[in-house]
Length: 172
Image (cartoon, rainbow, N blue to C red; front, side):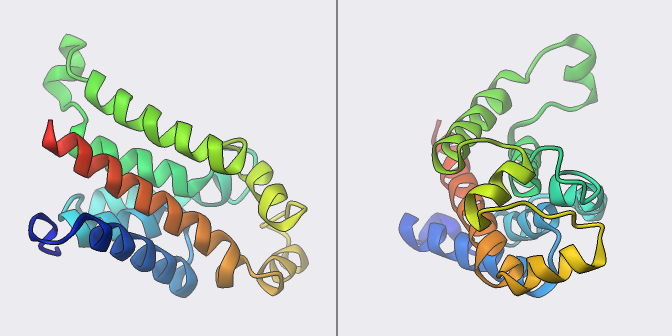
């Protein structure tokens, strides 16, 4: 965990972007790249939380039809910080702060990418979408910069926004 409390905010946000970008470039799996970054920055999450992100990559199961995995990872990180536990869940209390923070992240994502569905984000950043489960399509995704400058940038931006929102919420 970095000493985010004693760092300039812009430095924390830049660290979030660079760390997430690097994880996505080097290891892939957008939600896990997000969770690893938030763990490095804020010390949140454990192995189970990290593992839970695995199947959510590429819009869920690499199918492209669901929510962008980077955004899902951001939602998960917000939940780890501001979410409710089992007791509050059963009493139906305590979710408001997480919902508000997640909505802020959602809205920033929409402003930047125009939608939340993985294939729609791909269309925005590549000019087309890919079937990530098809070997040739996946190779083309990589050739066009999937893990060089495209999805890496998406993950970096979401990490930066998530860190920004967490820092704001922690002040309240």
